[in-house]
Image (cartoon, rainbow, N blue to C red; front, side):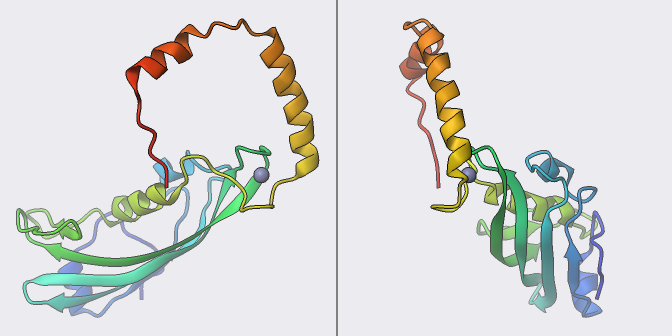
Amino acid sequence: MTTHIERVVDPHILAQRNTPIEALITADIAPRLSELLSQPEAEVLVKLVFHKEGKAVRAVGSVSGGMTLCCQRCLQDYSERVAIDLDLRFVGPNAADSDDDVELDDDGLVEIRALIEDELILAVPLIPRHPEGGCDESIIGQYMVQETEVASAAPTRKPFADALAGLNIKKTQD
Ligand SMILES: [Zn+2]
């Protein structure tokens, strides 16, 4: 078992040697993810087991734990739970025939850290929020007062908002 994640791995070798990965995601491993978090260290454990499947290598496992985000309703930190099942198929260059297939480079290597980091970045909500009922309502009360004051001081015309509405931007949200 390896308890840290190399930047790049050879899935065929990991399968041959029967070496699973079981490691914590740290800020140095996932710098792009860290920028999205309130606390740079996610408390997330990655587990991956590699085995050969014909010419390909399959890696099955999970990413689970918590990421500290700032709730956009009460502006307090909270832990967003993450539980992602991983089922990856590593294939040769230009051999991918489904979205789940990951192509190895010419040397049979893959940037595994970036791959797992991408999965976690996708798990960060567009608008982070406490689970229903989890916000500190006393803080929201204060915030609402400020928001009303700002609204009454602002001009009624909002050229920027009007321009955005004209662009007909489609908001996607899970
Ligand atoms: Zn909240």
